[in-house]
Length: 64
Image (spheres, rainbow, N blue to C red):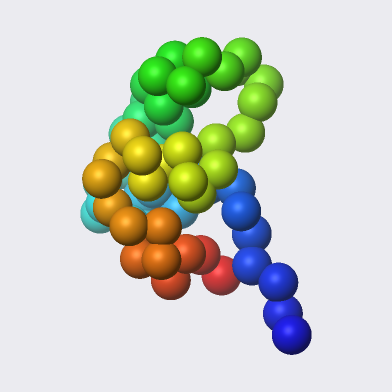
């Protein structure tokens, strides 16, 4: 059984939203601030889901 990632990267945000990779970087920065994370910490699927309102299952479908 292949494991999927639990981390969201700017390229993933680009694929999900159809916006630029730079937009993905800025959105992940906003999510880190929203969840009181430090700049070096990763954003998980659940945190992205909480911020964006997209169900986690839909997000994980886009991750390879």
